[in-house]
Length: 251
Image (tube, rainbow, N blue to C red; front, top):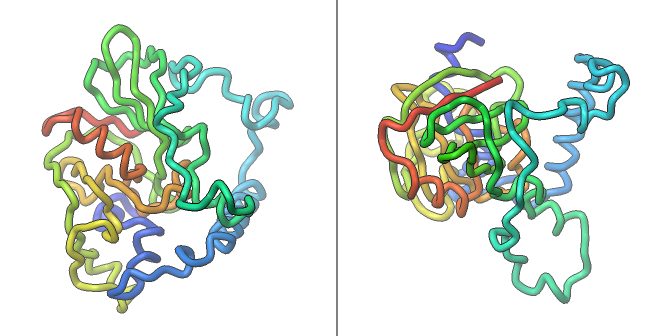
């Protein structure tokens, strides 16, 4: 698929599933085990098609093959930003379904040392590592875990934030509605909207950095090109980003 065709598609895989009907119901929203099985199948397929990180680095373990991701030093986690447990979670048994509701802790916001060479204020998105960096002064950055484009919808480039919206409405692209006729023509902004609490639009494309009500998808290749964040994280970033901010997407 060409870039021009991809630019017409913004809503994520999770988005499409969440709004498969006007009510916003989703098969994976009610069956997180199925979601995890799907991700495992995708990873197995990708491992069969591409060399492992271990083979590329002389036998090093996959997670440690990259000595340092793009100029980033080890993160200092921020425990107080961990998502609160669901109501009643303390007394409930710990199950795979409950665990799948939570973001992987390594993708929680963190303050990190950063030497990527970008000016303070720049947003840098590393789609391989699944991190977004909001570059700060003095070789620092605020780092967030993100969901990125799935195979066939991955891209890279440089844009600027052209528009910001709180609780944005969503109009599914025509091409998506042809593939999924049950999608609504328009969905009002709000807690159930697939674009989440905030959206920052990238240049003249249909790509956005936006929120999500599905934190278990952060850190995965799940979207049709948009950059997905937890709602609480996108709210924090939104407050610190102005229209005109430079956004660099790396692959």
